[in-house]
Image (cartoon, one colour):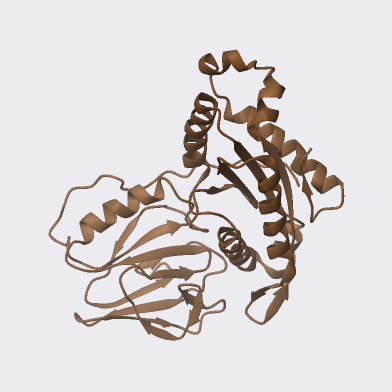
Length: 308
């Protein structure tokens, strides 16, 4: 795993007054440049593409000049692919033409839009902006910022009530060659599908986030190390057992995982039991411990869990 920095993307138009077009359907960017920007869809034809003449312009090489069009007849909206090179996707499925429904996700290149319709689009838009501050637009799971805020609270609660807490760092093995061989669209697809497979292995109260690039992080409240290890192994096996499909291409994927628990965190800091109530939680010490084990999983051959 190569070191990387997580960029911070500003949310555009987070606060805007109601306007006469508040009831107009719109597309909101939930992944890509200009995160949070709203594109209203008037009656008639609205073109999406790389061309300067497109009403919704997307500055990406993977996007065709005239990529797709949305036709609004005042009753329903139909999205139609314009024989683009890389296709138009609605809810992760390639489409030639399809009627849009409220909440649909439209993917053009690496940009993902959320379609909002109905009589109170402005309220839905602000709800979506709030959601964007807590979730990762590509994968739909929590983002790093929300995770760190939540982890600090859970760590404090665990220390205060002497409850178990486990942390797992997860990283996709050999992800760069996937992007280099199959393209970034395939890489984005794998990130989304990987997040969904991981979610299928965890409890509702567990906290999964995209930590950066191809790295995920998972917090398991009130879970001791042994059952956490079982969860980690279940996730590893689930990812490895079936290749990921991108179009008709099968792409095998594996994960490396590092696991630590709260008792090891306390040992790392040499915190005595009688100091727990006054100890200030430090999520980054906990994360570093799990991350060191993740690196050892990488060095040990990948597709494995390291827990000590």
